[in-house]
Image (cartoon, rainbow, N blue to C red):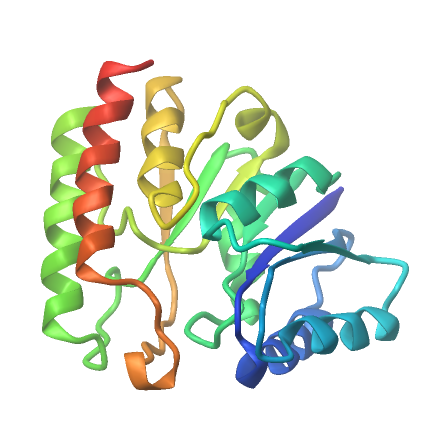
Length: 231
């Protein structure tokens, strides 16, 4: 059994090195790891750092370098193309989420209880989450539940894990942060139940590099309706 960890990267020099060290340190028992790093034309030195990190574990680390900036969604799609694992998980290149929780997330899949698992930031108390993040997530998650019959608490979570065959049957088009609602919508449309587990979350600010904006929330709403109409 192999876990593919897809890491989209765009200008994350301050954090990508530590993220990679945390990923390498994760112990998964009999499950092997494969890391697929996709650099989305970074300009801050992230690309060079990625290549240095690859040399520390070249057998299990793949790197794809894009020469134009296409967006997070496009990077994840590239990562899915090159990933070869039985289970796939998406890992952001910041330090908001903790790779040490991989086993918590993939255990329901390993135990045969689920085909798709989301790590929810809202299933346990976390007073560090800003109110506007809670409100935005609540609106988008509630809309997702109404439109697709899901029972989620955190549709926008970056920690999404699934069996390979689940994602292989889905055609994704998103280029930016709209990849999150698109993946959720397409998975729900195919009848897969999304299992949620609680995870830790250390939110960062725009000053420390956070990139998502209010416009991305509007784009998420559009994507949820687009996927409903265009199946």
